Image (cartoon, rainbow, N blue to C red; front, top):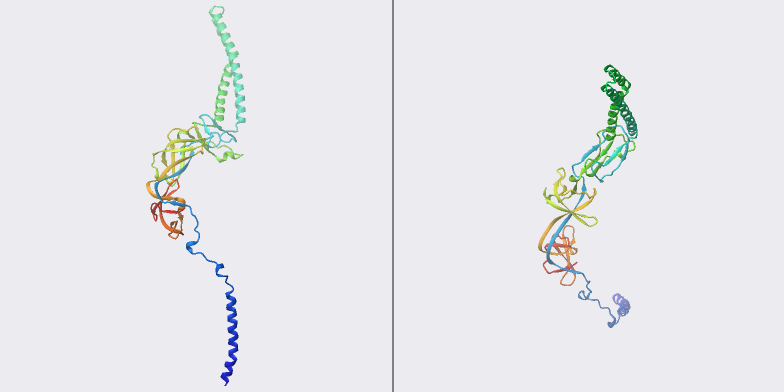
Length: 367
């Protein structure tokens, strides 16, 4: 009896639940649009494929060069110049580093104003004394000639002649003293002129100023005799200096051509010389003297690094760099972008990269 009552109570509940489920189902069906309005998603094959710029793997020559910069300098041989007069203040520097100079050009001088005044005063005194000496010597000579002439013509006796000559010597004794004074004045004058020259530095050769001591810029600099303050290199030893990891590609004594781009293109033939103390530094010594090039001018030495004929290659812009590998993009059979690992070789100056493996001649890849 109790079981029948439970069943009779559950039947209405089941009926209500069934009605609700049916209603929800009908409402859910109304969510979708009619068949004609339903969205149709494209398949993978129907999707639009991006357009890429493509390049073709070809065969070409790979020519690669390395431009090695070099600077025109005084080279390794330098003439050291110094003041030979000590204790004087520095006055003037007439050149700067890199200036071309001729033999005999005044490069620098000390303050010699006081010395010049002494020389000038001594010049005046010597000139005056020389005039006096010349005048007095002429008068003495005339008087002696007069006495000798009178004696020859028997106008005076021998004793008178001798006494007159003695008198003349006594009267003109100042001439001898003046001669001695002039002698010592001229010695002093030469010494002062030597001091003046030792207070100046002249270029001994035609060449370039390659060194100027920093102390010349100090306002209170006092000269120390013999201390180097300037350096000049003769044109014949001026050279180009290069610092390059490719030094071993050149042999000492090898003839090379340098190119200078300044107001047009100028070339210079030079020979290679190694710097013993540095494995990267070399000097390029011009075959002929260069007299029209400024210190510090830059030239280029072109080294042929690669010259490979008829190799498989592709535009370098198509090569991608991974962490430790190279790869390219290509379009696979489905038309989608994919990658290929490649092994590359030399790169040319005109933008091509050699392909050692990973691609075939005629393949097209994405640039």
